[in-house]
Every structure is written in C-alpha cells, then in structure tokens.
Image (cartoon, rainbow, N blue to C red; front, side, top):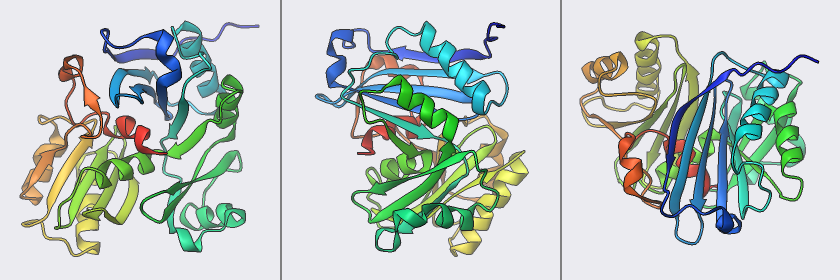
Length: 295
C-alpha cells in the first residue's frame, strides 16, 4: 500500500501559551472549518470565552472526497491534541456553495434535499444534506457536505455528538451579534475564489449568498449585483470586509472606486483574545472564530 503524500502546509499557528492547557480540554470548544483548499481550527475556553488556539493548514491543490479525508488523517496523525475525544463540544463548519436559507416555520426536515436542490441544481449525490437552526433568528440553513468527510469526523469523535454547520451560518451569527446598526450594512467574507455577501439591518438578516469569482472584476460585478438587487446606495451604505483580503489588494482598491464607504471588520466582540493574536489582521478568520456562536 502506497503512503499518502502530504499535500498541506501550515499557513498560520497562534496559541495563547499562557492559557492553553491540555488538561483543561473538557472545558474547551473545538471549532473546525473544512473546505476544498484549507483546514482551520480554533479552540475556545467556554468558561472564559477566550480564544486559545488558531491554526490553518492550506492544501496544495483542491481536494475532495477520499483525497481530502486522507489529508485530514495526516494532519490529525501529526497533531498534538486534535484526536482528543473529551472536548466540551465539537463543531465542524463546511465551506462551499451548497446552502439555502429558509424561515423556520416553512422548514420540514424530510424535504431538506428538495429545498437545497431548488437552490443548487447541481448538488452531487455524494453530498449529505444537513441543516442548522439559528436559535435567535428563526432561520434554518439547509446545506450539504461531502458524506465521506462527515462520516470521517463522526468516526474520529465517536463519543461526541459532532455538530455540523455551514460557513455562512458562522458568518451570520458573527455579524448579527456584532452589528447593531440601524442602517443596512453589507458584510463580505472573502476567500481566494469565493465571496459570501451578507446584508443585515441590526439583528435582522436580509440577504446571504456565495459567489465564485476569478478576478477583481468578477468580485466587483457580484457586489454591484447585490447593491442593485436590494437598491442599496454606494454613497450611503457601508461595506465591511472579512477574510482573505488585505488593504493592498486589487479587489480592495477597485471596490473603493465603486463604493464610498469600505472598511475592514474586527475580531468578534463576544470572544477575548490575548496579545498573541495581534499579529493577525482583525478581519481575518472571522467565520472561524464565530463557529463558537453556533449553538
């Protein structure tokens, strides 16, 4: 049997060395995010709401199914605590385009796959359909994750009820718990090839969708599409950016030409961070941090 070739590289590792203690894992929440090109994790002390560990492994190419599971296995084999089974809670966020949002009153679990197929007509059969109820918003997020990946996590933590959420749910919870503005606000989570646009007024969600983009022109097109669809003003409404984007990027520069008020978001206010985390832009890993808010 051939050995599995390593196809990941650590891009980020921040640990609050003064506070993290493997003996205290029973009071820690393990928050994981999996996508086709990265694996991220965040450990939160549930007693103090303090973020203790942030880590990112980037895959050298897009991985799916068996290849993705193989690389997760290698990451776990090399890791100092991921295979521990006595976490207070474990949440896995999946990052992809397969999701749709429904009012809680219209959701029936037995029809979940039908709901999702209406929004994602190319939904592969190899994907398991899951759902997450937002406890304070009367919204249900129906989403899909590769069945092979879901089953792998369930095998890794057989004694725990692993919770699965979509990355858009973590973004929604993060924005709705930090943005108290009366005026509509636009939040954009940026990844290397996808952007998730969320529009909210205070704690009321009004829009959320994910788009695939190739270049800055695509990014601007989808952003303006949402502005036009919701009749938002590029002179009045603010755009807040999160994720994998820097002030020097072409996207930020071009977006500023179209939207007057563009800025970068902050770390979640409901979590505490030690000075170790100062080395990371505040707007990065926003959805990873906020997996913790998905109950």
